[in-house]
View 1 (cartoon, rainbow, N blue to C red):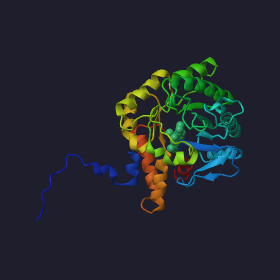
View 2: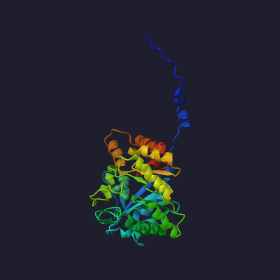
View 3: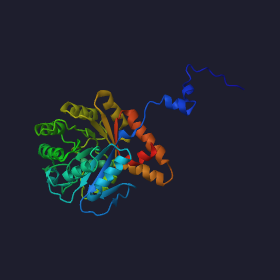
View 4: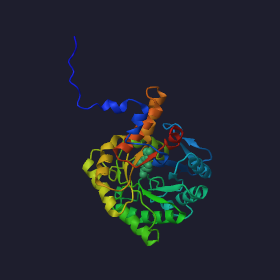
Length: 325
Ligand code: PBG
């Protein structure tokens, strides 16, 4: 017996027939200039230290930074973001505004190694404070405005060291105004700011914290955002745009595609997404267990970020993507 079929009004499958056709009508594309490579430099080590839950990701000694930046450039990576893990910690992270501190040294080394590379600094305090918080602690909490004053010193120093873009990740209120004011007053009106504008207090940072924040025992719930809040997520990014952020960001990525799309629909600014350590570790663990196809999962994830509205993707997969694309 034949089941009577009604003729579909429109046959979507016509454009899925061949690889050439599918490519012709593809809406979202990946290219190397989409990606930003995070680099971790740790003081006091002499060999790269593997990060256990993140295969192929290392904390590198400072004297290997130049080589890493050159290698990244030769693979087609156009931008790196630098994270320092300091041994010169104090209660406010003062090494970050010291001319000979780790942050300034990393920036100078990276720029010198490959002047064409876009060098971005992650501007925070958590890897430079003895308590591990992203700013000055007072009365059992991070003091917003004291932290902003220190952040102003830090970003001016980063600009003097030759950074191409500032990326504040501490989630302090008013951080973009404070940074813009300090940079402009020091003559750095041309240095853009990529704000970690909507950054959630996420369990997906677990592997990163294991790797670099082992002394940190608290939470960041009084400054990072509640993962439950979508309206507030938009408001935070809109506030940073109003304060003068050149690029907005959502962090983490895969669990927050709705937030990305929401910000995309409400802002004309470029939008970045941070594919964080836990997201990376989960793919690696799944691939090692033989339950997923690593390359296919990564390409699909990156495509989903762009489809949801991201223009830029910060990912530990940046070098691997250079092999795959
Ligand atoms: C802190 C910081 C975090 C990450 C980088 N810098 C998050 C946090 O500890 O709250 C996470 C990066 C990652 O998980 O890949 N400013």
